[in-house]
Length: 482
Image (cartoon, rainbow, N blue to C red; front, side, top):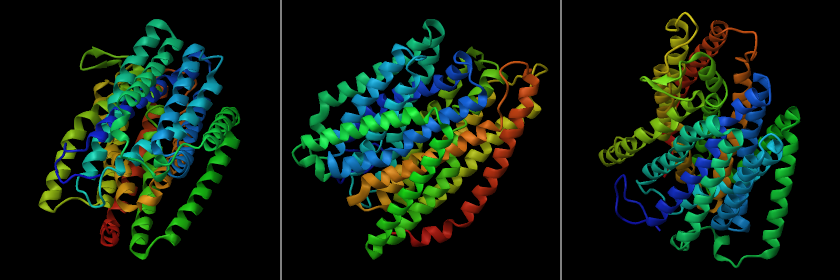
C-alpha cells in the first residue's frame, strides 16, 4: 500500500480518513474524561481516593480489553468491521451517560469500556498496513495520527466543562455522544477509501455466527466491567491476571517468531515495560493534577479565565503545536542519517516527564500566594513539557509496534501495547491517592502542601528512571533490526 513519495505530510488518502475517525472518537472519550472525576467528587460526593481509584479502574479496563478487540480485528471480523462496531457501541455508552449520568453511571461506563475495546486497536492497525516495513514515513505518520487524538481531546476538554457549567452534567456528557455520531458518519460516507486496506478477515465474507458471538462477548464485557467498577479490589486482581495472560501470549509470539524477528520483539517488550512508568504518571492529569487545578490554581491562563477542568486541554493543545514540528524534525533527521533511536526517544520522553512534575512541584512549593494558589501559567509550562514527553513515548509507541512486530500479529501487538497501559492506569490511581484531600474541612494552604510533596517525589523518581533508561540506549539500539 505504501507509496514511494516521502516527507512529513505525504501519506496515503486512507490515512486521513482514519485520522478523522480517530479524532472524533477521542473527542467523545476525552470529553467524558475531563468531567468524570470532578463529577464523582462534586456531584456524587465520592472521596478523592474513591474517585481516583474508580476512574483509574475504569481507564485500566478501557485499555485491558483493547487486546481482545485487536484479536477480533485480526482474526474474526476484520479491522474495519471491528472498528465500526466499536464506534456504534461507544455511541450507545455516551448516549446513556448523557441521558442520566447519576442513574446510569456504571452501566454507561461498562458499555464505553466494551466499545473502546473493540475500537481502539483497529484504526492504528489499519494505519500500520498503509506503509511497507522500513518506510521512513512511519514515525511521522503516527506522530500526526497522535495529533488527531489530541485535536479531538482539546476540543472536548475545552467545550464539555463549559457546557456542563451552564447546562448541567447530563448536557456535558451528551456532547460526547455527538462527537461519536460525527465519527460514525465520517466512516460511512468515506469507507470506500479503506476497501483495499485491512486484515485477512476483512476480505472474507461476514460470518453472521462470528458477528453474533462478538456481540454476545461485547455484552458480557460491558456487564462484567460495570460490576467490577463497584468492586475495585477484584477489578485490580483481574487486571493483573489479564496482564499475566497477555505476557504469556506475548512470550509465545516471541518463541514462534523467526530468528530475525525475535530481537525486535524482545526490545519492543522492554520499551512497553518502560512505558508503564510514563502512563502511570500520565494518569495524574485526570486525577491528582485535575483536582489540584480545581483547588490550588487560579483559573486563568495569561489573564484569560478558564474552567478548572479545562486545564487538561493544555495537554492536547501542546501536542497539536509540537506534533507537526516533530514530524518535520523526524523527516529531516532521517534524511541526514542522524535520527534518534526508539530507545533514545523513550528515555528523552521520560526526562521531559520528570521536568514537567518538577516544574509544577517547585511552583507549588515556592511561588504560591498567601492563599495557597499558584498561577495557571505554571501549568502551561508543565503540560508543555509533559506533552513533549508524551509524543516521544506514547506518540511513538504505536510506531514502535508497527516497526518492530510482524504484520501477521499486528492487532494483537497493538492490543498488548494498550494492555500494558491498563496496568499503568491502576498504578497511576495508586499514586494519585497519595494526594487524597478531604473535600471539606481543609484549607488551600494545607492541600498545597500535599500536592507539592507528591509532584516533587514523582519528578525525582522519574528523573532517576530516565537516567537508567538512557544508560541502556546503546545496548538496545545495537540489536534493533528493521
